[in-house]
Image 1 (cartoon, rainbow, N blue to C red):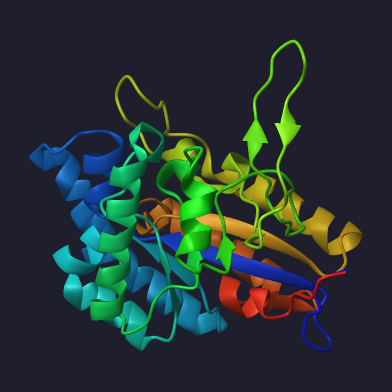
Image 2: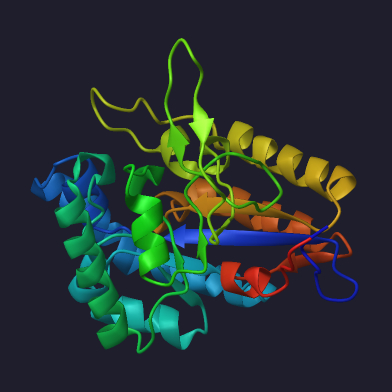
Length: 280
């Protein structure tokens, strides 16, 4: 396997905490009423401290995918994440809807978020997660141009990193693939995300789903990967405004406790996991 995990470790578990705060409502859903913004405020003022505390209890180093908007709007909470030693990955400028962008705008917003990282984190991010997990035909090239090492937005595998390829869509004649990107893709899945299950958005997402069912699904993914995918990676995606609600946080702690009880589980940031990759 191309991932060479530390000695004694058999499965990498990445917890990607998407610190979207106000921006997910403004950027993805075009909602900015006081009600929706208050849900973003809960994300920062309640969710972030709860997650930092949980991660500290279990020695989890997470990758916090953070739009520049959240860094600027909630600087004290953002500084707590950085000071706790977690990785910060790029996650858009204001959780913009990437597929709607023209190439010039996409490049401009990428430059803006990288400038925010350099100013507020002190370093450029090594990895990127697209807001709402979608690309334009130019996104992959833009990531390569800006020196990113990894992405975590696509779904072409489940437990194994891979090099994504640009696709030229064909209909009757079939689609064709371009050459593999030098970027390493850490695959994600809507099955492994708390937002679709839990967040109620009238007329958009039913949400309000069973947390027990969600965590059972996540446990099943962990069990399969632990048993059948040696040196694989399980990438979970959580949102402080969602996972830190009381009923979800209780279940999430039980899941982390369960996974940490398996010998060989390695909780790590995505860049740490990237550093164990070697090409075949």
